[in-house]
Amino acid sequence: MESKIAATPFEGWGFDATRPLVIAGPCSAETEEQVLETARRLKPTRTQVFRAGIWKPRTRPNSFEGVGVKGLKWLKMVKEETGLLTTTEVANAQHAYEALKYGVDILWIGARTTVNPFTIQEIADALSGVDIPVCVKNPVNPDVDLWIGSIERLQKVGIKRIAAVHRGFSSFSETRYRNSPNWQIPIELKRIRPDLPLICDPSHISGRRNLLLEVSQKAMDLNFDGLMIETHPDPDNAWSDAKQQITPEELGQLLGQLILRKTDPGSNFQHQLEALRCEIDRLDQELMNILEDRMKVAAGIGQCKKENGVTILQPARWDQIISKYLAVGEKKGFSEEFIRKLFMAIHQESINTQTKIMNDE
Ligand code: PEP
Ligand code: MN
Image (tube, rainbow, N blue to C red):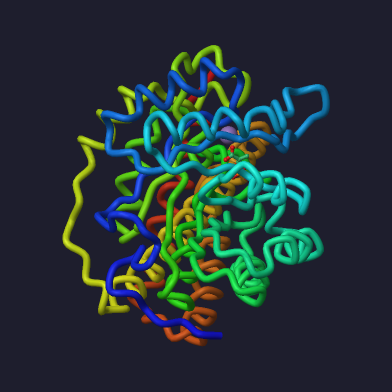
């Protein structure tokens, strides 16, 4: 597969290539007035592409599922009145035909579609021979190959202008994000496919307004080429994703606050370093979680000792632990000094935890 790196990320796309490309607009098109008002208020910001979902993939039935085809007319009006390019999500071949019929400028494939090669193939077949840019969101699960696979299916039918959109990944455990960013996945995508512009969707990663700036800045620091941010004239009353939407004016402020550092597109070094740092962050977080679990068990032991009137420090047990892990550590190539310090610190913290329990009434 051809993967020529363009001099600027959106070279040949017909856009001004200044970073970041800004795609903004409501999660969902709701009414003609709401769509047009959002676009008019976005016009003074540096937004280049107007987004609005017409067909909405909702997690549960009986939620608002989009206005359908009539919304495409509103997008056309946005383009005619403001000159902004337009984009909407297509989730099946019919959506693709309708969007093309109404002259939508850019299509995007949603996260729930990228996971399904059958659906992607259907959409790709519908776009065969059409010269339209397509943004491909990451699949909901952190699988870089599935993401690349969807992109390749589109390339095989002749789509040349493709961007990848990072919108975070579903996770079972509670995190501070709606969709956890797992930055190492888009970084890995960029390593494998440096030719593809990479856009971040801080709205769906954050799930709430107060994280948008932080996530957008992180994306800029990681050399992302663009941002897709949901904006609504009255965010609290949006028909979908109300908590994460901001007004067009707030978007203008957010963009003004971003610090754009110098990029070095010729070097892979920064990406590799970031990927490794993300991995370290993930492992450190796991270490903290394991230590937390260990302290909870220590607290249980403290309680047990208290109830049975036994002293906290059991020298024989401590001796057993340290000897065992000196041997394990040696096999893993750790120095004796490191193992001693590590286990002494852990042991001390356990003793402190147990002491607190002993002293609690
Ligand atoms: C959206 O952009 O509104 C949307 C539904 O996105 P995603 O596919 O990332 O959930
Ligand atoms: Mn949304």
